[in-house]
Structures are given as structure tokens and as C-alpha cells.
Length: 479
Image (cartoon, rainbow, N blue to C red; front, side, top):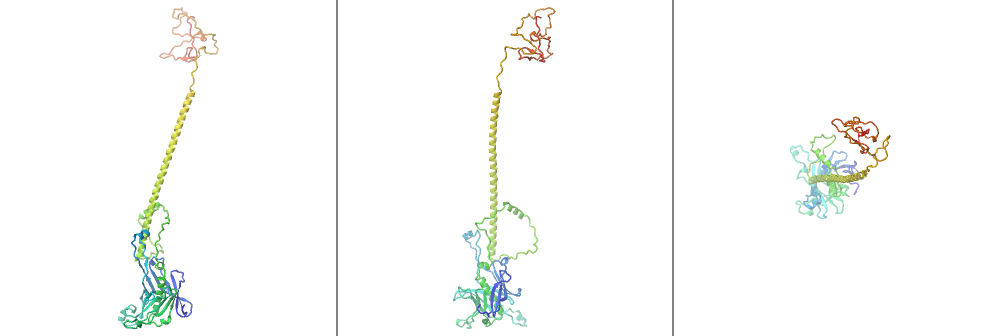
């Protein structure tokens, strides 16, 4: 503070804890600093505040009263056509960068007036300076004439005399600025500089936080609107601090399009999710009513190269994202096909191995069965028993046989004639007396059939009858 009796304005954060707003406090004659103006910036999150700078000065006690504002839209660099830079930037041209403007306009209200602040460089010290002019007459003279009412305001008239002011930096390494009134040229033709009046200091901007008005020199100004001059000096000082002494990207609210770094892994997505989303997009969309409390984005169409570059970069990024998702989906499908093919080949190989084992086991069992069958067949075959020749008599109970071989008695010729008592039927079979007693039994074969014979006692002693229960005696031809 130079002098506590001089009016001093302090730039402080806003009392409502809004980061992009500030308060301007006034202190004079040693009094406590009290709010005098409210400094407002647009919300950086709003789309309408992108790639531009704006500030407005309102009354501290009446928020609807606007004294003045500044809107600054920078120029942008032309996009580079170098293929190397485009390749380094991921296939899109580098983003255009804002160019620091060399001038800005302060819009005053009631009365409406535009003050152009032009940036320049001092010839002697090569320090930057900002020059602006204020008309000595700002208000129209009261008149009952209708002709006077149709004339333009004095602020817009080229014939209105103006005072020239400039903000100048005190030194190259200093952060203090001084606003002074340029001296008038007393020479009518303006050819000699020695007749020029010296500059008069009007205000001082210390440490980019305090603006002190040098009130004694303000009284010397022949100006009709001191309040307007005060607003112009405040707004010009704030713009110099924020635009020309701050970070351009933050000042103009320039934001880069977020892009994934090359080392960052992309999240894995279901390859069928995109197909389902594409099917949903094909369906006709129905107009949806706006939700309650939902407001439409007030972003205007792109009017600057930076906004257009952001749109192009976002389009290119989305295109690459779609291509990457499509490539990942194809890779996933190819990997799935390879996995299924490998699984089928493995199953087929296992089935072949299992069939080979089954064939081997079948062959082994077949050989074993044949070996066991041959062994069983070899074990079941035995030699035939010898035929008895010595004793052919059956060992029947109740029958006594003579010892020694049985000899048949010699008989006469059976065909010789015999007596009436010795004749018998020709077809009667006689049974032997040696094989037990009993009456003889005549057997006749059935008509038209054969006599079935059955071997008796090893098939050596004659044939038995049909029943196989009794033996036949043979009649003797003698008795």
C-alpha cells in the first residue's frame, strides 16, 4: 500500500467459495476493506466457456447491475502438415494452439461504450505496454430539439476529444504496472516533441493484487465519466494479470481430448456386446420426451479451429476405438475357433487311442479263448477201452453158468423130416437152454415194418426183443 488515504482496490477470492469468481474490495482513509465490485467468470465446466476468456464486473450489493465486461476469443495456429508430427500425434494433426491476442475490447454499459486496449512495446525500455483512450465527453447534452436526439452519442463520435492512457510495466523483471495519462502535445501541428506535456500517473498495480488510484492526479483530468474510467482501469488490470501474465491454457479454458497412452492396456470387452449394441442401434429410435429438470446443452456450434479440431480428434479416436474393438473381436473369434478345433482334435485322438486299446484287448481275449479252447479239447479226448474176450457171460443174478467155455451141442440137420411131435412152426425162433429157463416166445415182426434190434450185453450175445427187458431162448432142434 502506497498510502492508506488513497483509494485502493484489493482482489480477493469470492465469499461464496466459487473458484472462478472473485471480489474487489475498496479501502480508503485507513478504513477496513469493504466489497465494492463482484468479479465473475463463466463456469469452466460449461461448454460455452471453452476456448475463450470472459470476465464481467458487477455491483457487489446489487448483483443485477453490470458495469462492464470483456470477451476475448484468441486466434489459433494453423494445423501442421508434417507427416512426422501427424504420426507422433496418433494419426491426427497436432492441436492448434491459442495465439496471445494483441488487443481486447472493454464493453461499458449505461452509457454503452467500447474501449479498445491495444498492446505495444515501449521504444525506450522495450517493456510491454497497453494503450487505451477515453472520451472527455460521454453523455449527451440535454436538448429539446429532435435533431439533437437523432445524433449519435459523443462516445461514438469521431470528433469527440479523447484522453490517451497506457499501462506500462516498470521493469522487465518487475510485476508492477503503472497507468499514466499521456502528455498532450502543445504544438498545434504536432511536429515537435519538446512541446509535449509529461505523463501523469493515474493508478498503480502492485504485485498483481492491489490497484491504487492516485486521487490528486485524477482531479486534474478533464473527463466527464470518472466512474467509467475507474471500471476501465479495473477490467484492463485484471485482463493484463490473467491473460498476459497467466497460463494461456487455463485462461482460455483449453482442454485436450483425453487419449489412452500407448502403455495402458485397453479393457477387455465381450466380443458379442458390440453385436448386441449394433442390433439395438438398427432398431428405429423413438423420440424420447425430455426428463424433468433436464436442460439442453447450450454449447454453440464450433466457430473456432480448436473446437473443430476437438471434434475431428474425437471422431478419429472413436474410429480407432471401433477398429480396435473389431480387431479384438476377430482375434477372439479366431482364438475360439482354434480352441474348439484343438479340442475336437484332442477328443478324436483320444478316441483313436481308446479304439486301439479296445482292439488290442479284444485280440488278446480272442487268443486266450482259443488257447483255452484247444487246451480243453486236448484234455477231454481219452483212449478207447479194450474189448473183453475171455468172459462174455453177463453176470445176472439167479443164473448159474458152467465153468469153462460154452460149447454148443451138435444137432441134426434142421431140415430133415421129423416126427409129428417134433415139428414146430417154421418161423418160430428158438431160444437157447443155456441162457436161463422159461417158455419160449414167438416174435413176429410187425406188418410192413422192421424188427428193431437192440444190442444186449455189449452186443455180443444176440439181439434182444423190442422191449429190451427179456432174453429169448433158442429151441433145440433135437429135443
